[in-house]
Length: 121
Image 1 (cartoon, rainbow, N blue to C red):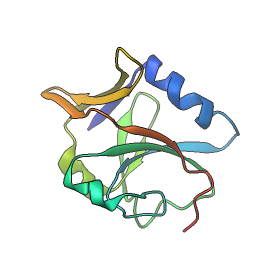
Image 2: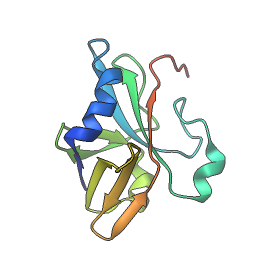
Image 3: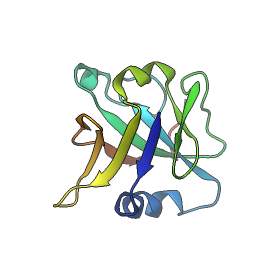
Image 4: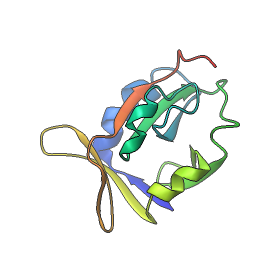
């Protein structure tokens, strides 16, 4: 699995990610599992969140694997690989929203970029 995050998508992520030192990005399947996932009911459709957390916030047991990306390894929930494809791209759409797509087409046409630095377990 590999994710390319375009420069345009990074422009949307960086204001949260770079706001303070030590923050990190996770790629989260939105299923209600983990302190950073709020909407388990959307698990009826494929829904991803690119969440920014602090370096001292826990990853395990939820984020038990990583995928490679052009910005380094991204923590994921291992079982969420079922909803991913080998080559993915996070990009910005024509009118400013983000889209997650793969070789076969759109994976999630409305992935969320979210600040979870205040989340607690």
